[in-house]
Length: 81
Image 1 (tube, rainbow, N blue to C red):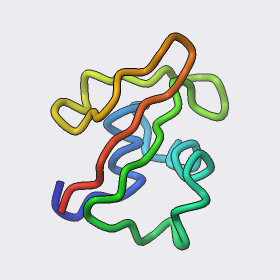
Image 2: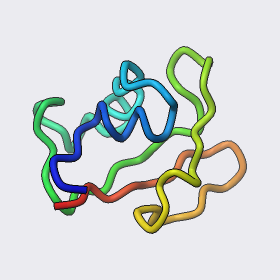
Image 3: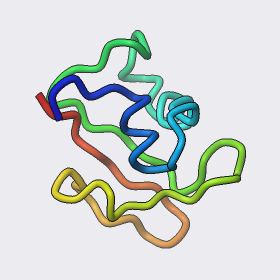
Image 4: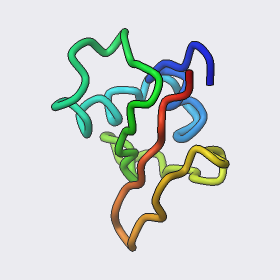
């Protein structure tokens, strides 16, 4: 999605943008700055938020879902240009 951010991905998946840190921490090795993600980057999206209060709603990822998670695992989403 144009102008995708970790906040927007988090809001789609976990229902609250503030949970962006869950995605950031799962992908720290490839994200230098949480405010800058690039088209084509593929992120792991954990099944549960860090605080354990939200389950990921993978249906909101639509065609951006690149792998189907095994039981208890996260999935990946590609950042869109």
